[in-house]
Image (cartoon, rainbow, N blue to C red; front, side, top):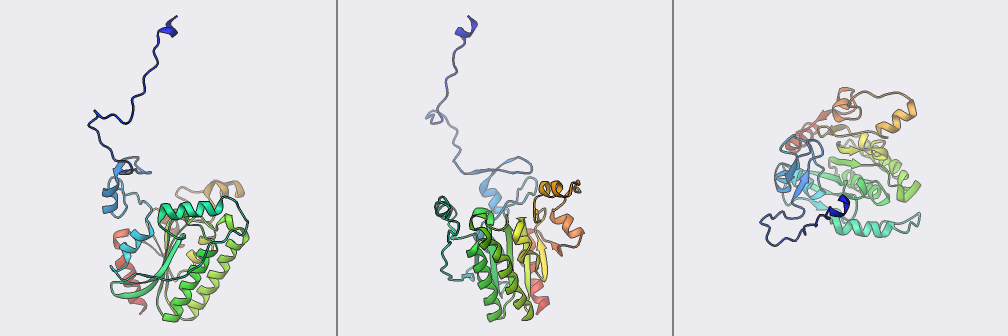
Length: 279
């Protein structure tokens, strides 16, 4: 039979010593927008922006600090708070441990003080690499502490938001952080201090429904997705089709939800000017 004559193709080993091709693992990244394969170092040098189509990649906390804070001036608040497991989920502690080893972060936000062109500020930066920047007990407490420090030191507050929303692993207690942070921001407002919220891709859920939307000035990076629930969920709820570009920064700017879309290269100078105007 013909089938008997078909020989099984031999699988060539990846470890081919004769091959002259050398592609180091982890050196390349695929752009979600244009689908191009890009050299990671080139992307990093371009402020984590695709050099081919201009798509914005997400930024690690460390890179974000390098982008907007004067070199050597960032001082992280030393808050020793352990993430709890209120629902007693078996895999949650292990997941947190793995993420800390992988990302080098203790939690989904880093808060501290630093200078922007010489102007001292309190700054909080969220990171999507840690459970999608979800807001749990520790995230809420760290941001609240940062707000209190802003009031005590009479400094402007800047929060870079990126989140999938409240952390489901911590149940109702994670939702309580919305009220706690919002209450602290009320005190900041009563003290007459400036709060700038910077929305990055994506900003969703309880974060959007609380501190991300409460800034005196709300900025956004280009094409960031911002909303409470996802588009599909909303369509299923209201039984209507939503307009094109719904929940993009450009759509929200047009409808008055945000004040300005700022490119990464201009973020530091824009923040500095806003602080100067407020003074």
